[in-house]
Image 1 (tube, rainbow, N blue to C red):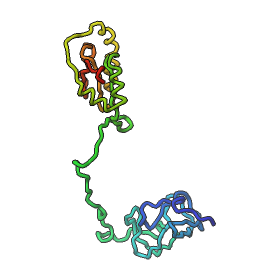
Image 2 (cartoon, helix red, strand yellow):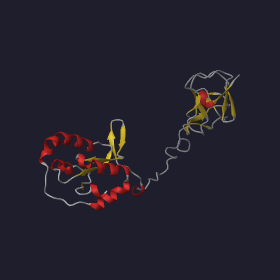
Image 3 (cartoon, rainbow, N blue to C red):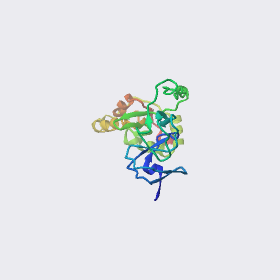
Image 4 (cartoon, rainbow, N blue to C red):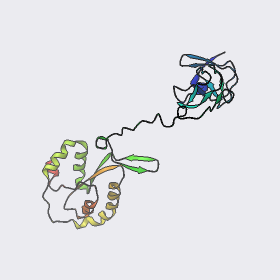
Length: 228
């Protein structure tokens, strides 16, 4: 008769278990390879029932899940069907049915050394905030935004260049801004962003509302483009 891997025909819950649980009916004579150990099924065993992986003498404990589930009421041979005909509860006592003896204190990882990430809850789990948005507030700052995107070292140059703030405003941009601002605001509120970096000209009064969004790095880029 063909030999099958034990895991193909039965489930072993713990390595130390004396029994395996049949996935489907095992017919007498079926040979199972239990990690190099040969098990020949001695009688038909229904699905969900137990087949002996090891010989157990009368009175000895039988383990499943790594725990004692009963005691052999007669000698059990390898390949036997383990059930009520050869397995019993036996006399109850702390020396036979101990509770919690395998419990070990949990050595929790110290909170100060735990690694975390900036995430957000989703219906199917957790999302990760791993994007930085570089958003030009007006078309004039598009080139600066591109420089920031393509060359991180330029970021330092832009920050050092700074810019002189002044009080002028471009009123003609307000009608256009009324349509653009909701789009920019929505972009900044995207949950996968860890931060948003608006690149603004201080002379564009329409861009100022972006300064109220959090988290944000607000740059004044007036007189900066020519220095990049």
